[in-house]
Image (cartoon, rainbow, N blue to C red; front, side, top):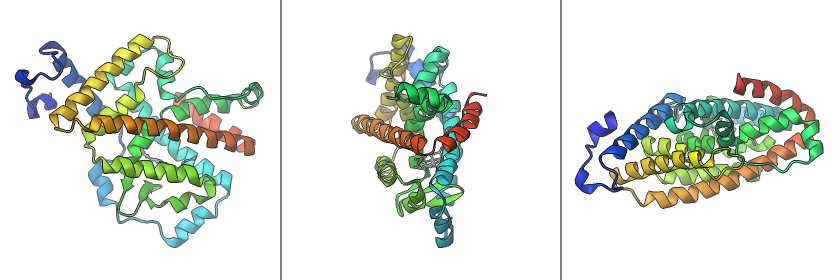
Length: 288
Ligand code: MHQ
């Protein structure tokens, strides 16, 4: 176990009073979360660093800006769904997550109950369902975005090159884009290690406060162990003060996700046909 090897556990400073049994488990849990993160993170940080010189040209930016609202939405939705699929894969390899019922796994991946009218649900039922899952892993996608972000010029790696916020202009949701970029900026400022990002992502996902959980106490136990794992890693890195900041980030994530859902609702009302034809294939993709 590489975590144990690099940082031998010293029983004289047992921070949680759990030695010898549980701490071994926590180490194992951390190791598998870190492994799962590494295997599903698409790009390594060094690879992304090396790609930083790749920026969109003026003409390319213009081409994105000249897209129609629904074209650009469709384009971004496909990219986001792709990212969500990697998050679902990440979740599946977290030990505590695998042990939950199928229902609770899905409840954790989606974000929360949406306030849809009965008519909206009937009219657009497939979209309504997709919407749920989609927004669920969105928080983790946003955490992961900080790895794909360059704070020097405020750009994100999107579609093979680094892009500034202006590239998303035709989505017509500047406030969301600004908030998402600000969030990425704030996350980068914390200078988290890959292991810290992995544990934080798992904690964002395994949240016992989510609605619609069947076995809340089991999710609570899973959450507690991931929390211990994160504290353990922060303690080991001598960065316990980060815990408080990470909880603050989680609150910001919640508000970002509700803003995102608001935009999706707006979009599905304005472009019901695109929403309808676009989301069912994505839905199948996520569940197949
Ligand atoms: C990932 C890789 C990745 C892929 C896609 C309102 C709306 C429909 C979208 C990236 C918001 C627009 C996303 C594509 C924008 C904020 C979205 C569109 C890490 C995250 C990352 C880089 C996504 C970040 C958020 C992007 C840019 O594993």
